[in-house]
Image (tube, rainbow, N blue to C red; front, side, top):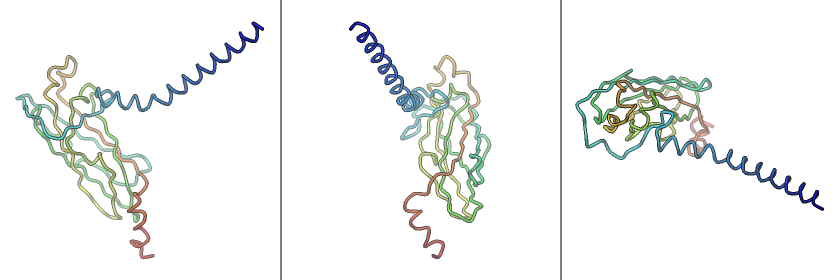
Length: 190
């Protein structure tokens, strides 16, 4: 009888470990995303409703980078490659996207900031990356991002020495929104 109890106990422990590991794997992606948003780890930026009340006399250079997923047919580039502004000063940069195809295409932009230590201090007020973008065939659009570098960066042990920040976007094609997909046959004259 003790052998059966021993085997049952081992099976139960093994099932418990498998369930625990499966639960941890399932929760790891949302937890990692939350961790990155809160800490700025991995170049994740912050979001604010308005600009900073404090503007320092120290300058910082922000560089802009644009790329696209290999299957994304759009052309995508920053309108200005870099800008210099005071820490805490609100900046406005534009990126341009062009749809050279003969079909409607929707896209979303993922982003990060390098060096990673600056991610938590790079604050976006408004950004085209917050929403899905839809371009008609042959349409060209200028898309803004409004941001500032949080003055708290100068109090961070590692980030206070940063003089250059690179904001990078990558556009990915996504499914058309329902409203665009329903309107598509009438646009094509069908």
